[in-house]
Length: 631
Image (cartoon, rainbow, N blue to C red; front, side, top):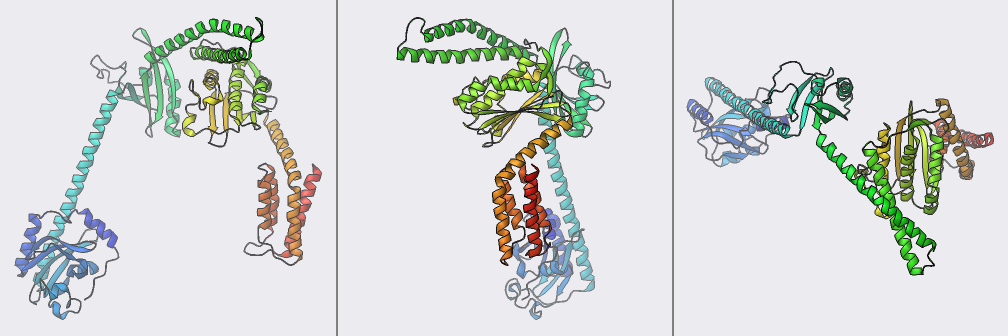
C-alpha cells in the first residue's frame, strides 16, 4: 500500500481548512442533498464529501457509509489532496497502490473509487467529492463532468460557509466593540472630569462633560452648534495650552497646570492635563479641584496653627532642660543627667519637626515670599558644606565640593541654601562611614544650572523613588530626620521654577539633582576644567599602573625573544584589565595605546609577526615614558 504524501502547502492548506469551521460540525441538509444527488447520478451505493485533516479524513456528508472518519494514511481522498487532480480507480484489487489497503481488504470493501478535488479559490485542496462502489466499474466522461459540476456546488457551499463565519465573527467583534464603547461612554459620563479633544489651533470637541461648559444649555445639551475653542472652556488659556497640545501631538509629551477662573460669580480652580491621543489632536482633561485646594489650604492652616501653638511651650521646655543640664540648680546624679539628656534630645528633635512643619506649610500656602537676588553657587555650596561639617564628621563622611566660579542663579539665597543643605544632610545620613558625599555644580545645558548631591549609600528602589519627596516619607527610620527635608526642598525648588529629582539603583548609591535657569561659565572654561581634571587623574593612574604595565611588556618581550608566540590581542586585553582596575579616565588613554598595538596585527592571522610585535611593545613602553615625562 502506498501512503500518500503531504503537499508542499500543507500548513497553509490546514489553516484554510480550519477557517471553514466545517470539521466536526453538525450535519447540514445542503451538503447531504448534494451527496445523495451524486450517488444517484453515478449509480453507486456510497458518496462522500470528505475533508482531509492533519491525521484523518472526516466526512461532512456521507451516503451509504456508517463511519464518520478514517485515518489519513489509508484514505483514497488523501491521494487527491496530494496531486490536486481527480483520481479514478476502476478496480482497487488490481491497483498496487490500494490492493492491500484495509478499506479494500475489509469493510467497506472498496473496488471502485472516483474523487475530484475541492480546491478553494486560493488554490488549497481541502478535501474531495467522491463516489465508491463495492464492484469494479468505469466512469464515463459525462459522469466525471457531472461529478466535477457537483463538486463546484460543494465548493460554493463551503465558500458561503466561510463567508457566513466571517460575517458572524465580524458581528461578534462589532458587538464587543459596541459594548466596549458603551462601557467607555458610561465611564466617561461617570468620571469627575471633562475630557476634550483639542487640535493644533485650539479647536476642540467634547468627550465628556462633568464640568458644565459655557456652551451647554440648562438640560446639559449643546445649544450653540458653533465652532468651539479651548478659550470657550477656560478663558484666555489658548496661548498657554496650544504649545502643550503641539508637544503632545508631535513628541508624545504630557503636561499639567492649573488655572483659576471666575465662574458664575465664584472662583473655580481647574487642573488641566494634556496628553497624546491622535495624530492631529491631543486629549485635554479638565478637573475641578476647587474643593480639594480649599481643603488643602484649611489643612495646612490647621497644621500650621497647631505647630505654632506648640513652638512657644516647647521653647520653654528646651530652655529649662538646658538649664538643668548645665547644673545651674545643682549637680545632677548620673541617672538624672541621663534622663535630662534623653529629654533634651527628644525635645530638640520635636523642635526641628515643628520648625520643618511650619516651613513646609508656609511654602505650600505661598506665605514664604521669595527674596530673589543673584546667588553665586560656589559660595552657596561652600556655606552648605560648612553647615554640614559637624554632622559629616560625626558620621565619618567626607564632603567633597566640585564647583567652578561663574555659576549663578536668581533665587532666594536662604531658601536655596536650605534646599541644598537638606539634600546634603540626607546624603550624609545614608552614606557608609569612610565614603565621600560629592556636591557638584555643573551645566545641564545652555543657561541651565544643575546641582547634584551624590552619595555611596544603599541606593533606592525604583518603586520607592516616587514617594521620596512626599511629606513624612522616611525609607529608613533608623537614620533619623523628620521625613520633611526632601518635601521642603521640592517646594523651594518648584517655587523657584526649577526641577528636582533623584537617580538611583539599589546598591549603587543615589544622585539627587536640582536644575534651574541660571548663568554658566563659558564653554571654554568648562572644557579647560574637565581637561585639567582628566589630565590630573590620568597622570595619577599612569604612575600607579606603570609597574604593572612595564612587567607586562617585559614579559611579552622575553616571550618573543625566546621564540614563543603571543596570542593576538593579548597585550590589549591585559592593558584593559590593568586600566580597568582604576575605574578612571586613564583607562581611555591606556586602551588607546593598546589598540594601536593591535592595529599593527594582520587581520586574519592567529599569530603576530615577531618583529612587528617587538616594535609595537617598544613603542608602547616609550609612549608611557613620554607621557609621564611630559607631566
